[in-house]
Amino acid sequence: MPMRIRNCALLLICCSLLTVAYAENKVLGELELAGSSDIERTSGVWVDGQYLGYLKELKGSKKILLLPGTHKLSVRQNGYQDFTRDVTLQPGEKQLVTVTMVKAEGYVMPAVTSEIKMSINPDRAAVFLDGQFVGHAGEFGGIGKSLIVAPGHRKISITLPGYNTFNTEIDLAPNQKFVLKTDLVKSGSPEMQEPK
Image 1: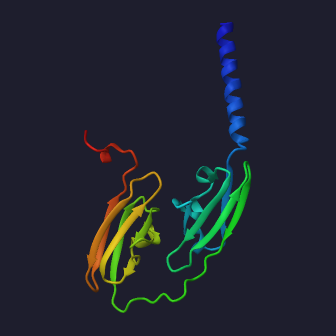
Image 2: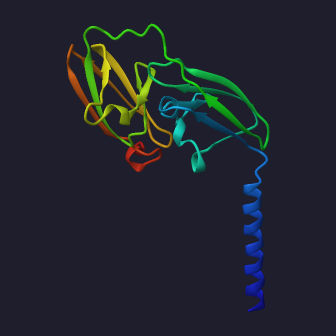
Image 3: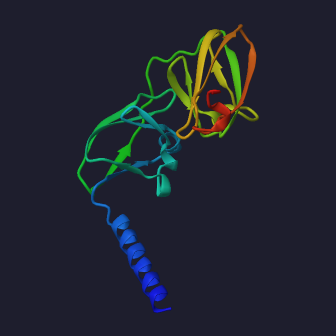
């Protein structure tokens, strides 16, 4: 019995030390992003070219922890100029970056359009049209919501960290309404593994 108590005590001490070490992490730096409007909060965030999600969801368990050094931050929203910064983090440092999106000049809506409606699960996935970020899937589904584009050949990519990227190409006629439905597959899911 005393041996069992001693082992339990050792286990509790080890768990306590690991918890303290995790809470006092001095190796990684934290990047916190803030935006004053829904435009900023619903913008897509990339660090070093990797899409992380949209700004308002990157906190708590999804906070941005990075190795020390300089990182390239990009925040994008359809119809706005990209917000880009080089951010240098030190070990254990927490840095706040306030994001301000500026409306893009010179965007002209085509005279003839086509419409793409989306039903994507999960709907927080980033949507790229012809290689350009245009928003999140949830913005283009439901009543009165769709992506308005010029007719012609279009390449669509839908991506979300932890899921396989969905890619498709479509040819849209003038005034055509197209519905895109898909469920993203989690990365490493048996459904997407190559047969042996």
